[in-house]
Image (cartoon, rainbow, N blue to C red):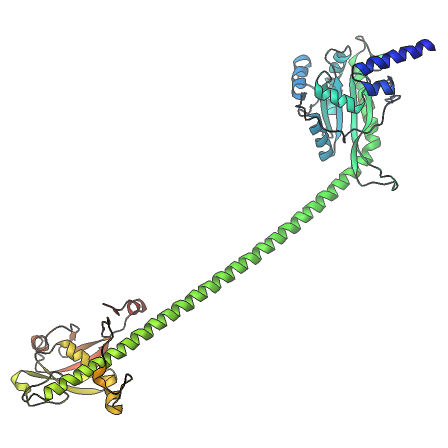
Length: 444
């Protein structure tokens, strides 16, 4: 008895020196055929331990494994141990952890077992994530320490199980926990003479039994995951519907702003055009009164000169139209009014146009003897910078002649058409488009 105690003391000291303090504290258990391991620490998988951020050696282990045993093996997860944990938890799968050492006596037997067709078929199922690591490397050694591995080679099966909260007896949170473990080969299956078939069947049996026992927990985790996914999709749909509604509201507001701005600009443009039209009309009216003042002044000057026919006279004076110095015209205005007017041969067509243009204000002057600008007609001046454009033409029907050149000398142009010294002219309006009206010559 004393010998056994001393031996255990030295073994614990040796294990402590090589860094396996947890094994030294817990003892060196043996694995039996039932799959149970004596004196194994808690089955908690150790997800709360910090990740050492080591680069995965799994790809190198896989390459070595294929170079020795061929490429017909289980699908090894070729990333870090911590990412294998995350993938198993995220995808709701079982995680199979294989820890071995290339220099260990039983590693050759484990490698042959892992490429056995039955094991390959079993571990290739989509419900598994298989991670293999060499404990001579830092990442696998850290995993062995967290899992409390007691012997090599090691095969562990982790599954999602509910985490029971103290005082409640229930939980809605799931954690990965070890549900089956094999620490080293069983004693009756160690050695080079043992066939791989029994080892393969034993491995499958040891992993299958906890899978059946834990399938309910995994299904619960899947249902919880599906519920979370459904809630997430519902929130995403609600958020999408809210964003779409918000986008529609923004679009309506944008269209309303654009419509309001467009209407404002349209009103401003209409007001500008109306103001310009009113300004043009005011200038036009002032020009008519100023032109009438000039015509009246010219008539007074012509009447004061005996024997002279004035270009603006309302009556035939002493000059005889037959001598060719004065022409007599019958004018029919737009409203049907007929007027007879004499003009000197030296007058221009503009004198005729001015006479016609001022008839509307001439009636007002004759009836009221007053103007919108005061009682003194002679005081009215044309608007500065205003260039008047006539909105009518003078037409002779027999023959058909349109007179629109206001600079032409009256006697010459009428004689050329055989209409001197007497002619009948019709005032015919000229209709302009809106753009032509807008761009009409208001300024020189």
